[in-house]
Image 1: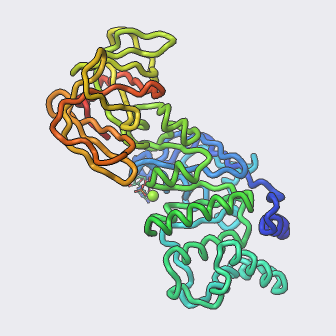
Image 2 (image 1 turned 45 degrees about the vertical axis):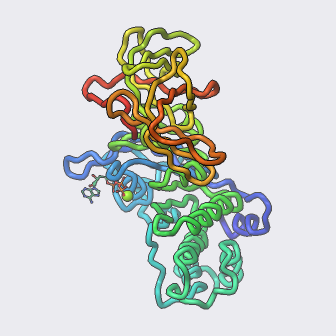
Image 3 (image 1 turned 120 degrees about the horizontal axis):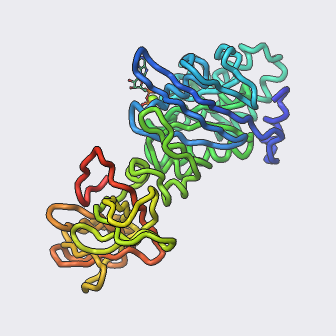
Length: 385
Ligand SMILES: Nc1ncnc2c1ncn2[C@@H]1O[C@H](COP(=O)(O)OP(=O)(O)OP(=O)(O)O)[C@@H](O)[C@H]1O
Ligand SMILES: [Mg+2]
């Protein structure tokens, strides 16, 4: 924003004047000594979009954010904001806001002083600062708490001050590195709603690193799943959940059952797989697979349905455990010898008793994913991830 227009437009509740900036990560690689932390990553974040970055510990998420912010200089590749390279700009000239997990507020400064800090440091005229800070404090629902010190606030309130402080200087992009992981579930939900709202109000472009899949699914417009320095898939949350591009993604996003088997037919209607321990499943081939190929079927607990009678193609199993969880019951079943399958069903009344023989089928509207069995690994039948 040149001079407060975007902020004011947003605060008034009207659509933001500007729609944020694009971030273009172009073939970025980073090595720490010989270790490749970020491996030829290309990712385009659209203007006004929240992109969640998900992946296991050590896959390179923070490194990528630090490169975008300018704290780490990438080994190769380029970062562009609105199409312009920012590689040669120091962090303070990138206009990028950052919120970390435990964003340290200045402990001796009030909420108001914390939020005003960046504006003062920039030399914004005093006359402008007051109104702007008030509007931001209002935007994060902290009106009335302006004079409190950080230690007089809850964790969620402190995070909202941190957000307001970052937004005060109107960054073109906000980077959030697990900003809510220290908060309890309810506060986290509040903050997630807050981020969505601020996105709408300010046309915020944000990259949000999170370990929490529900957070990624709920908050993000798109999700990028990272593994070993690479992006394995980038798509809408629903698409990533329903059509995982790889076995890794299928196990990392949500819960899934992995069942090994062999392809008996493959055509436009799907890939038909005969499971090693009985049962037939028709799924979508995520890898090219030929008849006779060894495959792993990834089927989610909610894609399965329990039957009390056997029928053609159903998967025979023994019922081990039923865990009622509010509106749902999670069933744990054994299939073959020692292989666990999880099934989730809506709960009405008391769950069925354990120990019975049951049969499993795939819901008619569900499409499991079928992956070629990796040649180098020997994953076990029926493992759950
Ligand atoms: N300053 C550094 N020097 C050397 N290696 C580093 C440095 N910072 C990170 N690494 C290594 O680079 C890899 C990626 O680290 P990074 O912090 O980006 O992971 P992450 O995805 O953010 O993980 P987490 O989810 O645990 O925060 C890790 O193997 C890490 O040990
Ligand atoms: Mg990290």
